[in-house]
Image 1 (cartoon, rainbow, N blue to C red):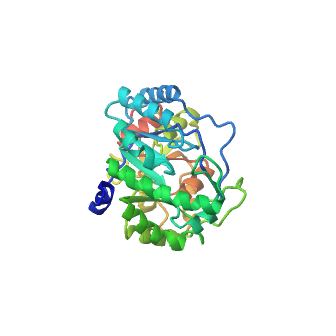
Image 2: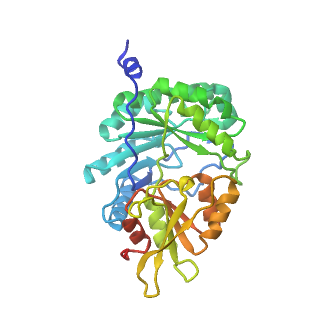
Image 3: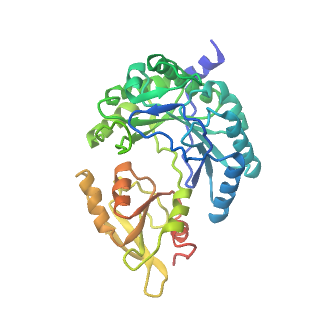
Length: 375
């Protein structure tokens, strides 16, 4: 038995919980696949060079008083398609911040080739986007795939792609990095296929899955309906037979800095809604939250707890989140430990910025109010 097969037989390493403060550095320069239901990369998009990534990370570290726990290497392109700048960025992060966790988000086409080198350089968490393991279903999802750095007929490309993704999962796990599968639920395309996906990925060495719902892109050449609540629940049930379910790696720091930079607090939206069970830590998933803390300034401008408000009960689909948006009409932001795609989109459409965080309430709110302390 080879060492790789022995690793797979022994079982995958479990990923440590994601830390609260995560920032993404878009170092991927080359797009290697295109979904049918998403827009292509903008020609004006400029990925970060290692130097720009270093400057951006230093700026964010200063803005957050050093409170950044994890860097994720991603981008509209795939960081594994151009490994040299990716490795330079990892080296920069490791030298400047020796204790920083480093994650990688990828489609995994060249993961089998570079996994050992990347893990040795410092990558300790990998999220691989796998939406199907069947070439036939991949052909329904993707308009084109370039797994060999050249265009192949889709029928051939999907076979190579599926094999490369399996190799990537096994190679990163064997090299010592826990592997999470990032799976989007596409109604009537991969919904009946997810149990098989989970089984195959577990066999390859993945230990967890982060599940997202598909949302139509108006600019895409094709679109689907959104998955229903029942379809999402079934997807989680099917995948959890083989893989533990976790949250996707999400850039929480850049969201926070963007809110600081763009929000103008006015008399109509002076407050922040916070999902907390204790009052001291942001620790609740919005979907499971029965009440929210409302924090904001008093007549003297002192930031503090103003009241608690009940959230709409579970059920009702989008109506639940539209009702919540009305309830939070005086809030410029909502902060929760995790927020689903549908409530996030609904609230943001109503002018409420939505942030994911797992930090101290005082620290998070102080950052939103540009450093004003919570009393």
